[in-house]
Image (cartoon, rainbow, N blue to C red):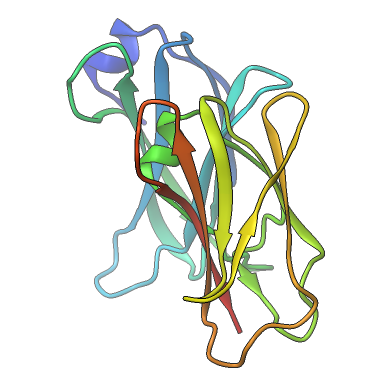
Length: 202
């Protein structure tokens, strides 16, 4: 484990340091994000997901490795009250002996983390077109609308629920050419939608 100055400056607190789930407490104006590297050249480091759990007020960072070996988990920090870029806060060095089960998390953007989004379901980032889930549920503060783009002709408007939660109903069948679902949010201070999450369709 290695620490950088932002970890101490912003008084991050490590609640859990299990390799597949790191949990942190941070000040309200702090945003966190995790990236993963594999120390072996050309090895897939796997996928990761960082979201803010509004029920516990904690940041949860998940990692699902694809291959065994040495991995480095980097936690990045953003001060939402300043114009500074994301900065490295802490690194965890993990050795994975054996892959028992690998999960591909959805691809999330920096905006997803900057808005303190919480992905409720589905957590699996690869959706089967033969058995699509009925909906995507996400908690997104500070937006006035959430949409799911299925293709250039199909757009699903999110149903607004209490506590900044949105439900986006997935059609039971989708065209064969669709390869991705793209979930977007419209911030209060913006004229354009921003990409939050991308799911792969297989």
